[in-house]
Amino acid sequence: MQFKLENWHKLSIYAVLTALLLSGIAWLIAHFSLRVMGEFGETVHPLEHWSMQVHGALIMPFAVLVGSLLLQHMRRAHRAHRNRASGWTMILSLMWLAVTGYGLYYFASETARPLWSVAHWVIGCALPVLLFLHIFLGRRHPKA
Image (cartoon, rainbow, N blue to C red; front, side, top):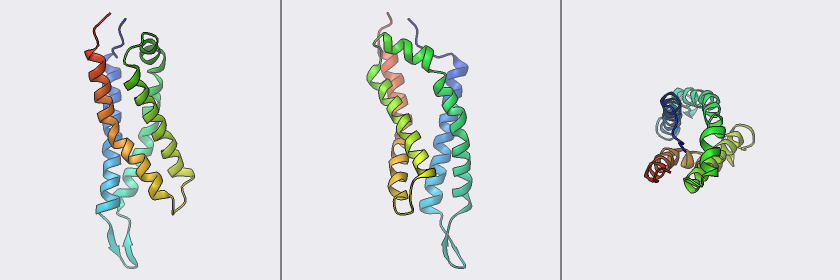
């Protein structure tokens, strides 16, 4: 049974994930390193707002792409007992990112926002490593 994605599908996921990662890193840099001194003290750098808008907009196509994996890739691999641990780690990480991202937008108070933020970006920065590991482990498995 084949669990490989078609090239267009794989490249779309990689492209959107890369753009998400870059926009998230741009936010981290702007938030922690590019503060600007204004008339009334330290102010937000324009890149911080711009990168957050791009990051939020990219979630929509990424959610569609991840959802498109459910019937073919995820269901078949799960039923075949292939790469389950790293696959579930990917699913749980994506769910964590969705919950913390939603929480940052709708629930986080000013005092809790730094905790929500760290909880989000630590897993977000780890996601490409988790994806690489998932792919590596899947390719290593002998073909049935």
